Amino acid sequence: MTLGVSAIGQGLLYGLLGIGLFLTFRILDFPDMTVEGTFPFGAAVAVSAITHGINPVLATLLAMLAGMLAGAVTGLLSTVGRMPVLLAGILVMTALFSINLRVMGRANLSLLNQPNLFKSLTNTLVSADFSSVLIGFVAVGLVVALLMLFLNTQRGQAFIAAGDNPTMAQSLGINPKRQQVLGLMLGNGLIGLSGALVAQSNGYADVNMGIGVIVIGLAAIIIGEVAFGNLTLSQRLVAVVLGSIIYRFILLVVLALGFSPDDLKLVSAVVLAIAIMVPQFDAQLKLRRVLKKGVQS
Amino acid sequence: MSQLALKGVTVNVPTDDGVKTLLDNVNLTLNSGDFVSVVGTNGAGKSTLFNTIAGNLPVAAGSIMLGGHDITTFSPEKRARYIARVFQDPKMGTAPRMTVAENLALASHRGQPLRFKLRRLNAQKPDFLTLTKQTGNGLDAALDRETASLSGGQRQALSLLMASLNQPDLLLLDEHTAALDPHTSAAIMQLTATMMTERHLTGLMITHHMADALAYGNRLLVLDHGQIVADYDAQQKARLQREDLLAYFA
Image (cartoon, rainbow over all chains, first blue to last red; front, side, top):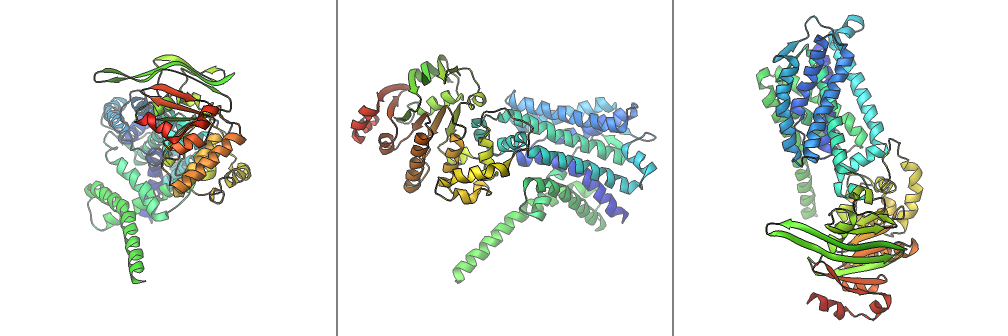
């Protein structure tokens, strides 16, 4: 029960990471490597701010802003600096490693004896396990609702169009480069938020906590797509969060099977690879069935 | 007043050997309602001319006036307020993962400032239904379908509808029937002609179909080596034969 609740809570918190990645990876159609630097950046900013006496809510918002700033740098390197976005993301991710060390002053910063969002809730309302579910649910609910609203505005539609077909978007007066920077800022802002919440939930920030998070985000997106099939864009945002929760349960099962926590990164990669391959194999199987039927008839 | 005026427009691009001139001192004036066919060999400068007018290539010399505005230094996005374009590839003119109605809704705001205002797709749908019915190719029944699932002809018809929304000052048709089969190509050309006339649009149309160049529009330009080497008005064009045009390609 406790493990299940914890998996749901972690799934919700990492679901924000999935949604952030979804904006660049699925809507704007490019891989953003900044993610691996932004996630610990959000954690570092939030934890560092809290240890400096800043209110946890404000610290979490600061982490989101820090993520947006990192996304803006990647966007500007790519659009103004005319750098491939993949390379721009790798550069910012690398730079953020040093920045995170500067922000925290060391490789690992604890929130021991410090207030944080989860603690304040645990002290007043719910048990520790349910606090991450509650905060995760509220954060995900707010983010999904705001994004759904945004994507249904004229600006949001232009954002989608710029990712779908930049040439067409430009011919309609939409600046695809601006939309790219906007997407990177929004996406990394959410990833910074996710990092801040995960760090507060865990009770510490670590400079290495970003390693492999892109796989976790991608797994959330792809598991959501495989599990729920054809959906509207707004529904897909919810599917990413559900995908993130399913992914956490898969990890629970893997641990229950006796795998070591050290194997989790390997397992994550394998789960993602399987999730990516399932639709391909499924399509091939369907095609074979259709062909077989055709030959028989 | 002329609708479009290119004065001494020269476009250069850097090469390994120095500079290559793609458009060489081009002067062109289009009046309101003109529908001009543009023909020429590959590399003659037809697409360069379109890219220059649309703002995708900077001019080295000269000026471009459109509807009384000097647009020479305008970005492509700013020019979109005045210029609409249909591309050769049907996939280029539409957003594949958005529905037909969503594509039309986007085009209905072409060139206007983007706002955080909720779209009114359902309110716009009756207008889109009327609009798409005139294509006669089933586009009206596909308003809620993603454009990726449409045929090439349907997508190009949609591109044409999107480009003609909001009465652009200039419509650029960039070999817009080249990727279609002969039957669909003829249907799209017929739709183009109807829209140009009914909406009194001003347009330039690049084509490699000599029959279309002769049959449609009130003027015909021949480009070669980045220059306009022939400019036929309606009367001269009426007397032209396919062989006369093919002579420019020899």
